[in-house]
Amino acid sequence: GNSSETHGYSCAGISGGSYTNVIDKFDFATDGNSVDVGDLPQITGNLGGSSSTTHGYCLAGYQNWTDRIQKFSFSTGTQNASNIGDLVVGREMTDGTQN
Image (tube, rainbow, N blue to C red; front, side):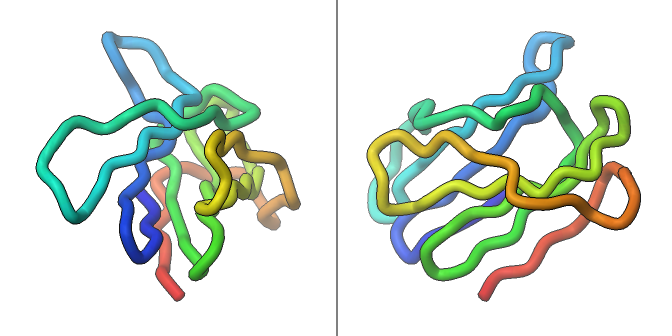
């Protein structure tokens, strides 16, 4: 997962037995359901998340043991992620940090 000052984000995972690439967003200030705000470039699961104050980062993942670092902005309406780099090796079930 990722978080801005006002919202939480969930990236990819397994839904109904299939891996997804969906980025969901939910509001910390109100109770309610999340909304689909974007997609990762790759369908995956078991990935880690990190956040800066302005962007969310989705790291690695299960699908083909990916090594991708994927980034999306908290400030745009549609938050599709883009690949910005690679980890040294592909892996899954990584942990993340917040800035």
